Length: 452
Image 1 (cartoon, rainbow, N blue to C red):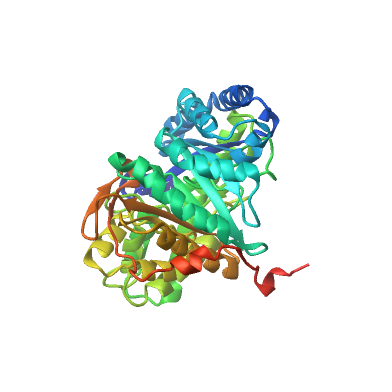
Image 2: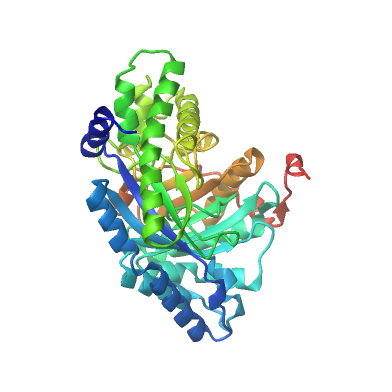
């Protein structure tokens, strides 16, 4: 039972430490919408999304008002569109993206995810059509997010898909250059993508999920940062214990909101994702947590060790606070969305190479990183391959969301706006990886994938 101290502490976390529910995401199965006529399929998709999610935003706002808990985003995720559109006789899937965008606007949500393909072991005709449609789809829609899973521990890495995605990211950047490569901010390339992730841009409704579910993503970097100020100079095991206790309290709030939203929307409760997701706001930074542990600046030696401890402690504390923890759950390190990461990147302490090392121990991967506009498609593909290899070998989710800054170079920046923030353009290696990427084929699964 909550006592007065717990209530006052929670109020302080909300009002002063940026504690919030980052998103309520409704996952919706669209498998029943398949139709050989693309217009008929799109109409079925629009009708089903609007029918299921018509009260999502209102319910989120009602809970926010009644409980006094900020709920920043209300979102929708759907079945990977390459699966739904496969039956339709069309070569361009942009019509499906435009339908998702229209449905999202009708429902009033912030984003809709699921313009996606799962190609870890190979590409179907529908997968190829969807991937080739991504640049047009993301440049001509506002709320649609896209993801492509190119590898897994079980399947290895589909290097043909990796090669394609380097070109797709470049094309998407060109088509959305006037909006600060906004299209690329809505596109993520995964290894070991999860089916119940509530966070964008990588959310989709997995084929193993129920007809519709409610997944909630909580966040609280500012709360953790503030808690660590009370144990300044203490041994690291004390630091870890402090993070665990804080993560427990944050996740309990998410569990409360998830259960309430599930009941009011008559929708199955899926998971609580307890990730620490930063924003550009001062005091809401994962980088500042690492610096509070004793690092002069994020990216210096010791950063990977500090992040590993943070990620582990968040998971241990959160998993005891919810009946169903899932999604990604841990610490995100998106450069443009974290004011401490931005500062470290601008000073040169935080580099892409160091970020790659950090992705071995954090929740996702190279996230919201601006690179020079003249970066080749092959270099982007090589960056994706590196991250996919980390995910494949370590049996974890990794991802790449890079923003080629058209017409810009190192020292410049791009402003995406809102929660997506402002990204300094970071240097990439000039030496070519083109011959490696041109080989194509598949990197086989590691020996430890054979667990049957």
